Length: 378
Ligand SMILES: NC(=O)c1ccc[n+]([C@@H]2O[C@H](COP(=O)([O-])OP(=O)(O)OC[C@H]3O[C@@H](n4cnc5c(N)ncnc54)[C@H](O)[C@@H]3O)[C@@H](O)[C@H]2O)c1
Image (tube, rainbow, N blue to C red; front, top):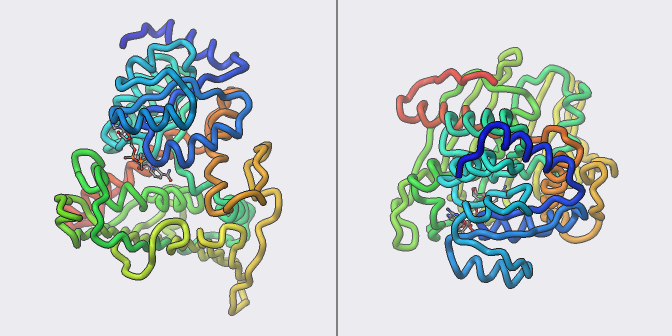
């Protein structure tokens, strides 16, 4: 699908001035239904108008669940519709960049699942195309929306820890040997645990301490076969990093085979920043509290996240309704729609998605060449 520069710009401006935003979902599998449908339901200005999935059963299920009749196997057909102003891309990673570039060329705003691309070059092409077209672009770094992470970022920014010495994150799950579909296939996912789970924690590091300057990484595949299906991607990854900011250190570990840790939001997702003046500890399983310590203290105290951090400002969501380990995710779609309405950048945008991708590329290179690798700066 080809659009001239003028047509693209006109379409983007036209879309931004619209009162109701028609949204299309491309890839109607797990995350689209779990996170994005309830997220869109929070936004009175957004209307889900079209669906796309290459799997007819998945598409049929999404049609049944949403009542949306415009349903396509080919994303170009969805992108050709004038009532679609914005798209959510929730396909396997391989398809993110081609779909995003086509959507941008059609003048659509784009919320893309993480990791936004197969490599850093692809993510930069997406960022540049979206900026040139004047469309809104967002990376689904969902865990930025956890109340405790929002409060942690606020405390770091307002000086609670002083100058950071260390960033530390640990994501431990036990997925055993079960098959995990496209996630265990390099040509579909590019990386395993690195893109699947560590990408979010790389984003925590950038959010809290700023860009990493260099890193050394290692990974391991413990299972070449998962439930009878070949796996060619890593189950474990770790990064030792130096940040640009005064040589602060980062240690990040993520595993799918940490026996006994279980799966999902209740399993270990630990993040700590230690600085000259204090330290902060986040755990996803406790989304409404942080552990804090000030210089001179020898034990951490648990503090509650203040009410104003329990949701994104303006979100109509009642933070006390539903499971707090799930419902924060819906604010992500609210942020996307608000950025479109208010004609401002989404947070996090493709820029944050691309910087995480730069770190991922550096980690892949480091593992391959067994050496420290410099990371391109934003
Ligand atoms: N932000 C988060 O917390 C989070 C959580 C889970 C998954 N994800 C990301 O979301 C994406 C999807 O993950 P999932 O768990 O929903 O996977 P999934 O396999 O459940 O769903 C993906 C869907 O995309 C469809 N699809 C494949 N190729 C397509 C194409 N070319 N056009 C249209 N549809 C196509 C598949 O048929 C499938 O139904 C991945 O990038 C993943 O990393 C993000």
